[in-house]
Length: 344
Image (cartoon, rainbow, N blue to C red):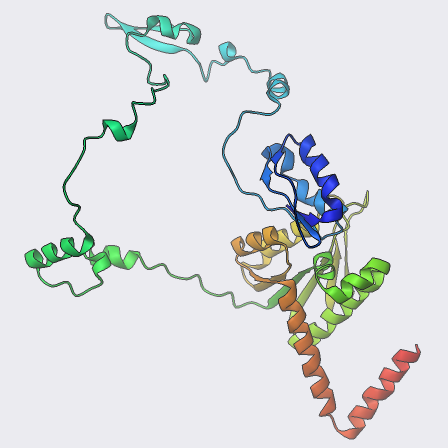
């Protein structure tokens, strides 16, 4: 988990309530890094919580660890009300054979009927696989010696020695074929608040006026879209507004999306990427590591916040160069409207 250091107290309290095990936060400049493990049932939807209290600056990345004893087993067992004796389809009993006939033995009576030691019994430390395996003192034969023996027997190998023992068909199957690139229109999906708090100039403005920072990002992407002639979808989190059904607005040619209640920008981008990537070229701009992995799995291309910033600055520079090359009348027209906009 990577969060602003001022949010570390809230995060540690949440993790304790989740029955998580974690180390002390590691402070790196303005960021607190917390590593540990937690039950999947507790932490599965925690990313939305982090996004809320860290204002889009926090993120969490998880991977499967291993099965652990249930942290709330009494509660789970009580909810399920499982009765092993009443589970007819998945019986816990065993069938034993005696004098050519089988008979049923209850699960808790099995040890009394067994005539061999259980394979589930814990092994003694000295009975390891290494000790039971017979020793071998011969010199191992390396790949080079094996190849020399093979060539003396069957002749010189012309193809790649790595596949010498395989047929041509097996070798050809080893070469995977890349999926064809979609030929549809290009889309750029942008995680709005993630980008605002990743760009220093917008981050400073957002500290005093978040609406102004949003407007500046919309204007920058509108210019970028006009130059690139692609489709731009800018997504902002609005999932905390109760009763919010979500909205999509057109702003200077780009689609500005405000997510519905209980739907984060990550969730909307993941869903939209999955739908568009089948037939279109999709790029997603975000600095969230977890979201980037999901994007790659959906067949889209990821763009970091820094890369998007550079692309927009290059587009703005190209637009200025195009304006400067306009005839005198064209430049005057541009300056007149620029002046009117400033007066307005």
